[in-house]
Picture 1 (cartoon, rainbow, N blue to C red):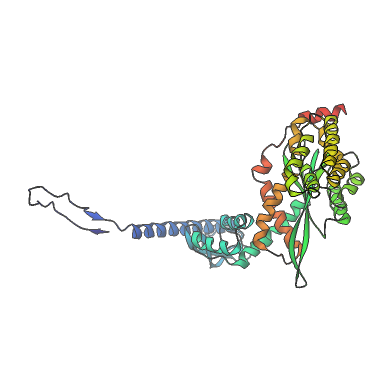
Picture 2 (picture 1 turned 135 degrees about the vertical axis):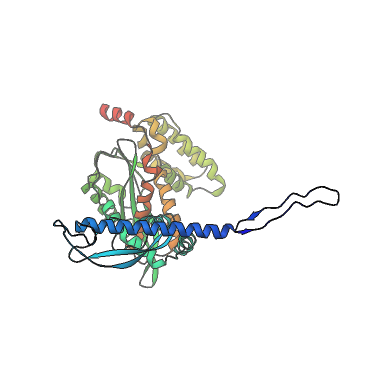
Length: 408
């Protein structure tokens, strides 16, 4: 602070000028001083806690002679810890025989857990590694390297696998299935790898990520293993599976879950029909198809479908008419469920939205070094999403479904 004194001066007209500030404050120096005071206080407090922890383990204070003493001190060593208050130096006591284990600071840890958690959160939220480095430099004054970020994520891979392999408890009346294609490097070439995902709506009405697995491709063998794993982990009570007409999937459902119905995603069905429709007529045909699924029940929907097929033939769209005639029944299974649920279960949109989130995150990575890396990042992202509002907000009221199932 640099005090300056100013006296009121009379102007030529006899008026006095307003005096300027008596004291000028160097805010930068004050802030730096406060930061140092906070850092020193944190350092002193942590070292005091470490001393108290050592006294507790020894059963006596430093230099205290008592029959209850369990150990004696053998010096100390310095450790640096990065905190929000700055870099502090810890004087960690050493004991002669007992290991000095403390809850205050874990062995080998160099940062507050909040810092590590924030790094993982940033990584899983889709922030690039380079951007993470810049952010840590700005927030904590320490640049965290790409290898550090990678090491932190390796630590949680074990927990992610435990989550992927956990038992499935309770009934899941609705299950949505889909696969997502990612890029991986293989023998110097970039090839595709598929990750299979299943989400379910539990009897409680909440959504849950049921399974995430790597598939060589979306074929019969991959879907067989995927369904078998879910069955072994306890998946039961399924009333309706919702998916696209994936190769090998539909055939396997009856083998593992013979009691469940299968609902072909309406949106994917529409897209399939549009492949046989000229661009200029897509909107008209789309309106016709939507009219089928706007009927009050399955009987009315089938009658409407017959009308649509006939109209498509009159429009000289024989291929599109054939696709509708052969596949429309696969899209009407949802009519057996409560009307309140129809909008949410006639398409695979709940899973498609998650897939978009996965693509947004994996786009930052580009090509993965192997399928396991792709699987881990996808599973980590889904595990993160499941812990947010997505998994903690009730998706459907299931009481009505229980009544329908009881009657059936």
